[in-house]
Picture 1 (spheres, one colour):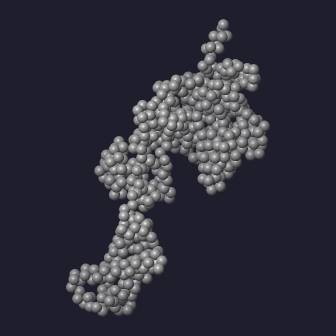
Picture 2: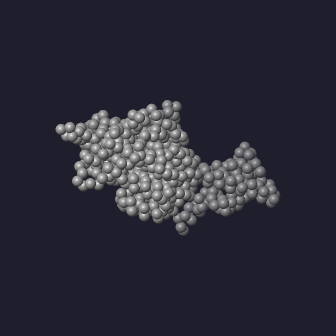
Picture 3: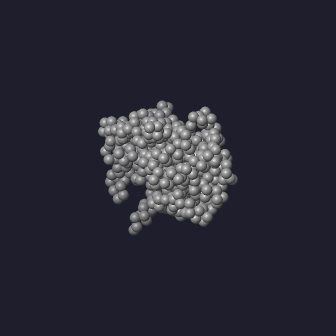
Length: 627
């Protein structure tokens, strides 16, 4: 006999026993042990035959014996209860019709007892069976991963409940921690809450924890960096409940992600006004230049959520674009309207070809050379790509009737001390003039460093830690503004939906972060102690670097205008003489494309366009001219 068939036969036999026991107890309870007539063999057999002939067929027809009870829950128990009540009611009707002379009270009591006995037995199976190895008749306990849950709220309760249902895949919750003193010492889903977040390292050792799951709905409004550091000290695997909003919806898809470096920023979650974004993205043809880069690719991920008619990704690097295409098609089961086009923004012929074919309505310009020290040694290339590539893109967009043009800028454009920053300041000026020249809405979005982007300090620190150190920091007091890649992309989309054209939108970056402090957090994140088992080395400022970045110029300071979004501000418009700007831009083009021109010549013309630009060799050049 097949194993499944044997199990069902045994279940039927056990239920017959439970029915007989329930009827016996029903007689005893109804007649308080004095129902001699009910113990008459004939009467007792009537009870048993009636009970077996009603409950067992109803259970079979109702599918009770087709349920895997070790995975059952409240729904299956409710089903068993309903079928038992139905069988009890049928027993009463049959007894009445056939005139069996059986006590209705006994049959009603027996019905309740059948529910308790059959349901209780099945819940015991559900509780016991997961603890046995497959085929292990002795019931040797399985060693599950031991879990610590950070957070004893609704999200924590959901995680514990889900883990208990699937211990073999996720693990077994052993304890929880929560910073709320009122919860400490209590239990959540029968799991003890043994302390607060500060106790995480000691509790992990004491209870042999293998993995920590962070499940706090409001975590991004408190100290995620603190929790991440404390978890990092344990060297346990750490995961975060991804969907921590709407516990009811979470049950549809339980997702855990790895703890990420971006969690160390402890930035509040960005709340988007999706109607404003949808109004200019949904069912539109969108082009993203530099769409294969860190910010560009995240922009694409966010854009596809708003169901564009077509997303065109334009980039010179085919590998990153191919990876993005595969990712989006996998995420959307091939239903993402995506088209990759390879080319350079410096190639105006290629740009016109792409624009003529797709007719984009919205353009996000994320293509640029961004690496500060490298651009200091290649100023001509920086100017050709960042300045004149942007000029090509703006002019092509104007020619083909693009409705909206959004350019990504940087805080390095404010009082620039490097070539890259100066080129982006020129870009901001170009955007303002382009908005004045036609119907196309043009805007720049200025923000600081993005955590984890290509060329940023975070990937460098990670690589250095993995290779055993040292971790290199340019200066102990150098500070930078940071935000996460998704947050930056979301706010760029939000800014693109605002009405004002020709302006530079400035994103709220929060407080600047000391790079040394960030390095120490990342070191602790990997389970090391800064300065002890992971050394830190100071290397000095690199060409073009400054100690701190600024989000606004002196002229803009105190004059930023609030928008409808609390994290987006408008910088006042620049006073630009169009004729003078175009004349100087033409001179910059002649110098940058002239092989015989010196790098300093390029920087001098940039200084004329951006008076606040100060480069490393400026003083030396001035002294030579005076001599």
